[in-house]
Image 1 (cartoon, rainbow, N blue to C red):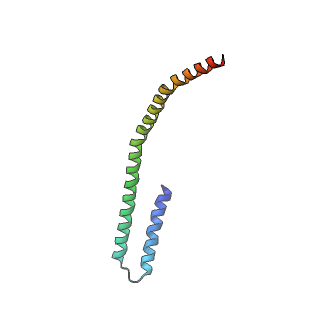
Image 2 (cartoon, helix red, strand yellow):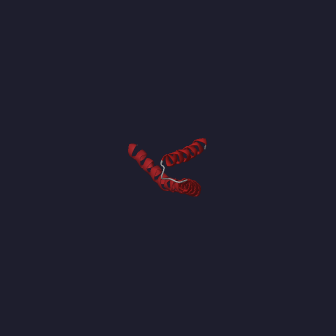
Image 3 (cartoon, one colour):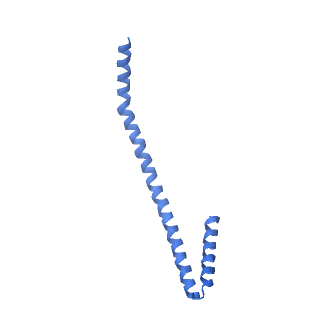
Length: 93
């Protein structure tokens, strides 16, 4: 979080310095750009929170589905492998 905060502060200061170096830029323009940047950062934060919430909801369902598929596979394959082993044992005798 410190890195992200430092990044935001550095980007804001860098943007302000760049605008002030250009004589055609007014303080209102800088404020507008700073507000746009803040809105972009807040939107990005909201997107990250939404993604993590979605992942939190989806991941357990996916794991349950995989577990169910493994269980079904085991139930379907295990009798066949026992039968195959029995037949191989008969052939070897």
